[in-house]
Length: 196
Ligand SMILES: [Zn+2]
Image (tube, rainbow, N blue to C red; front, top):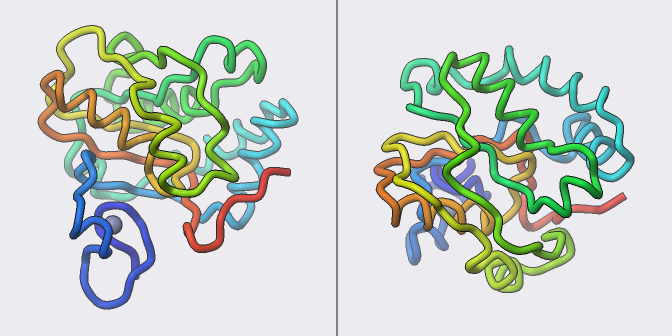
C-alpha cells in the first residue's frame, strides 16, 4: 500500500514515515502508471531520444486512465512543472507540458503557464539521492503572480517528489490553498530510475 500523500511504499498506515515526520507541501500525489513498464519506456524515448509519437501514445492512454477523484473534484487550473528554457531547447520536447495539455482538455480546466518559472537549470534528478535532489531544486522556481487557489500540478515522473515539492512550496507561499500533483509515472524510490 502506498502513502496517501507522496506515493512511497509503506505498510499499514496511510502515511509513510517521512510524510508523518515532515509533511510535503503538496496535499496529494497521484501517479497514473508505474514507471517500471510501458509508460516509463515511453517517457524515456520522448525525453532522451526525441520521440514525440511515444508521448502522444501515452497522452491518449492518460485521457482514459485519470482517476475519478480528479473529475469529482476538479482543480481551478492545471500547471505543468516548468522546464528551464535551455532544457526545452535541448530536448525539443516538454513532457510535463504535453501531459498538462492532455489533462487540461480531459478535465476541461484551463492550463496556466504564467504563474511559475524555473529560474535556473538543475541537474537531472535521476542518480541523485533524496537529500541531493532536495538541494538540487531548492530555490529553482519562482512564482511571478498571485497563485490560483486550487492547483493541479503536472509532471512526467515522480520519484521522491523533491521537484514537485519545491514548486508547491512557492505556490503555497504565493496564495495557493491546495496543490495536488499528478504524474504520468511514479517510481518506487527503493528501486530508483534508470536513465537509458
Ligand atoms: Zn509519504
